[in-house]
Image (cartoon, rainbow, N blue to C red; front, side, top):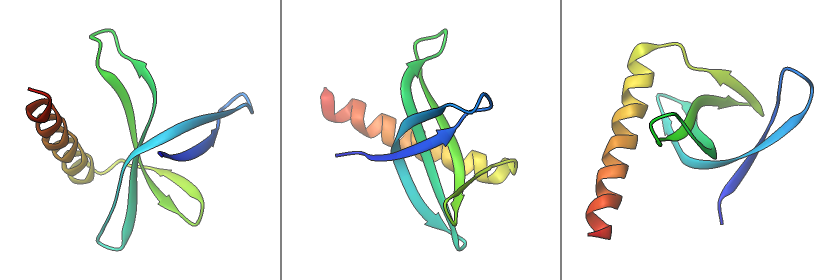
Length: 84
């Protein structure tokens, strides 16, 4: 069962996402979540954030985003290898 997260959109509506990756680093709680929509290339749309006291904080630090991107690539490669 996936952990869910509800996000209030700019129009006031609430959208539910599934958290697909969650980890702690440097005393921060990171989460990557998705609504399973895909981009124009067919890739899954994933959204990284810091979770703090029930609040979603955007990540604007390049190093943090790079770390998350590398983790997702590693997980994706591992899943592809398991499927073969």
